[in-house]
Image 1 (cartoon, rainbow, N blue to C red):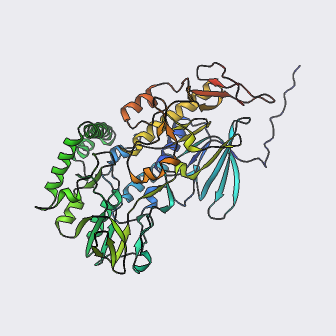
Image 2 (image 1 turned 30 degrees about the vertical axis):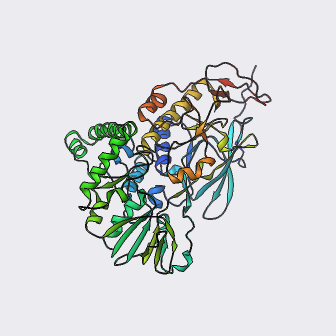
Image 3 (image 1 turned 180 degrees about the vertical axis):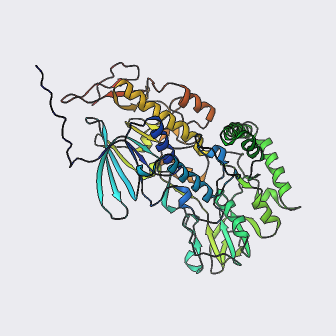
Length: 518
């Protein structure tokens, strides 16, 4: 006769264990937490955020005019309508939207602020991650364990921006500011400001500063494609008014997804025609006789780099009003009076803003090991744009570069929850992507020409030459791959729950035992 035994007593000295650990409480991490809580309510999870507040980028950046460069009907979550009348919205509105999402979904108890994830070590024997965490307020370090890690820690360094070396920097005794670290007490009213750069940050800053500065000069090495877009979407606002916020938002989202895809596809297929249309739009916005080709005609095709949107043409309005100007040329360095160009021209300034980009850092700098071996990211291949070859139970969030970031994040989160549910249903404890052809040709992780990506491409994972090893930038393709298709895949290998004293065989998603791994 069998005798019932008491359940094991938990070891109070053992580290806390979570089913899922989410790294980062920005737009991706908040979304992942909401999907987990709704789709898999029995799963234990926590969101570890190194900073003292949620919101990620939208809480970090405080420079004048900071806003989205995508419409919020596609940049927002599929599950939460964007109710504001602004389609291209400023940071405080976006931050309020994100924090509403946290509150409405009861996520506050799951977010742990000032908790920085330093690294994680995977044990196949235990089928779990051991995660090293540091309290950024006290310096205390401790360990917890997790069945899965969902890395939503962003793609750039929060502690430093990219600033190239400028000879003579020490000669300029007045403020030199990077937008990532904008001083709260910096007042540019009545001052001459030179902004170095021509990307999304620069074209946002210039019109915002021009409202009160004496004059703002944007210095660019090469031009950027800039398109005026309406800050408010009249069709979206009408749909929400007459159909209600839920249906209006859903229809607007579908409209804008199709519109984004159409514009990008047109630019890729007919680059010369796209260039002419953009140039024509710029001419209409600029003063008569303005040297459009010198300052707004890039040497590359549209969407080889991200196209900059300016709401209601605010950059062009500032130029027309004479409050802002554009200078195209290489910066030679700084002088006592301002910025010196290689042409010999000197631009006098009271404030210099180096809007020169981000420093990309894959996975937020998270160091990974698998069974004692360090994960070398350039030696891994991205699987479905969300996992890494040879790395078990690890997912990451990287959005689109040619469309709204969050469109892809939503699909990744849906697929992630379906994958966890599939593993539970089939008794799997772990899964690991492995290419059937180890010699598969690879190429850079992102096919994108932006400078911040080119500088970091050698430190990023690679992508393959076929699905599911391609990093897709197509929402339509990803809907099929991540939402419609099965999570089971011949190149995703599964591991059942470990048994005492024996290491279980690796299994493919078709259920056949795989070869022994050493």
